Length: 114
Length: 116
Image 1 (spheres, one colour):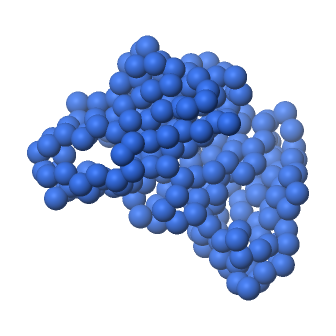
Image 2 (cartoon, each protein chain N blue to C red):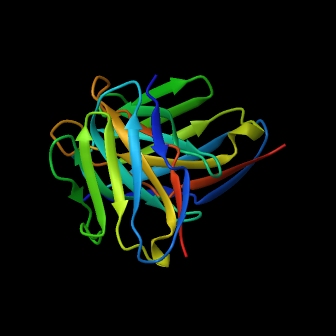
């Protein structure tokens, strides 16, 4: 089955700096890679996703890159703000077919220091 | 749009009793719903995947007789924890995939289960 590894497990940055979270996956059948933000005690929220036919996607201060050959993808947050502090999860999933199981990474706790 | 509700938000029950958790997609049809379990400061662990009208597919190590899943319609899935024990205490989160928006998954707010 799919195995998603995520690094680092914790990340502290100064407000205004950039934060990068990296994930690797093992199953070449995975072609959909969402990123979720989870604040304490709340549900995970989809913040950005990328599909395997695209190498990079950007949404304001958030960008995601995908390297299919190397099987890794990354989340980049620029100009970090205190409200960016949360746990971030990457995930990988095959699209198509009936199963579509999503495998999550272990999470990165991001702390943005004012 | 794409709202998923979950009920109850928290529940306390005694050992040996059963608890049912509901997951509803409020404004979209969900062909697939997922049930996760999350321990404090840990990632989401997929328990099972359910497709409307068919039996749920359970992950390895998850007891299907203990965690009963019923996906009765395109907007409702239920998880019943049978004969609950203290070790079943956890945060249970469901998610649903929007039939019309391929791939995107939306999470419910979660249910905090405490078994005494």
